[in-house]
Image 1 (cartoon, rainbow, N blue to C red):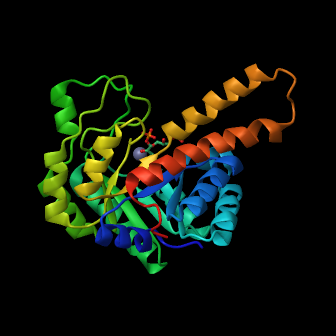
Image 2 (image 1 turned 135 degrees about the horizontal axis):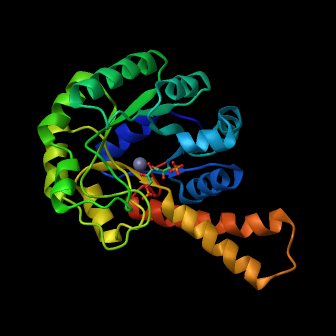
Length: 283
Ligand code: G3H
Ligand code: 13P
Ligand code: ZN
């Protein structure tokens, strides 16, 4: 069934686990996530980036996810990932999405508060939950010094002020993860996470979680992370299986015989994350 984001994350926060938020751009990725969630009896968040909206078209991707989520035997939310354009957020609200992220984290704190607060008022009026970001979660390709890395991390006092003034439902924070494939091992600032959770007590979101070692993920969940974003690991599983398959069988040409096994590979990644996040059996 299709549910709101806060319905999933409120329960996760109370019971101490995290719900995976998996990015989709098409039918096969969406099927992989929904089938994994049903097999694991796990809740799931299916999210689409602004790039994903452009790639698939908002009506098409809304129809794919809403149809599969509505039919699913487990609760699933449809979420806009990193909405930086207010118009995209409004389009998602009009297309029946159940959660949106207003990402104004590049703006100064007061402006981020103003923009987020406005979205919270509109979205809550329509029964839709809202995520926002404070601090800057970069890409693994960004060349940053230790000082710059530290400056990009979320300040606990600012996070407290932000959460209180905006009324946002869940908050993405920067504690050392980054988007895309890591070159070395990510170094997470667990003390910062612990402090922020103790002050805010609300559901906390971890972006850039692909490639983060299992022990670190489990520790982050134990310290209060309740939504974990995964895109890169699914993309890599898809691409690796595709390369392997085309090499194994140079005659294959039916897209279903190619994309079917790729979907299975993505499904295995999603299932392993659900186990790691503690959401298995929580539906
Ligand atoms: O946060 C980034 C997500 O992995 C989405 O990536 O903008 O390439 O769709 P994308
Ligand atoms: P990864 O690139 O680590 O999968 O992060 C995805 C993400 O944070 C989407 O918002
Ligand atoms: Zn992200």
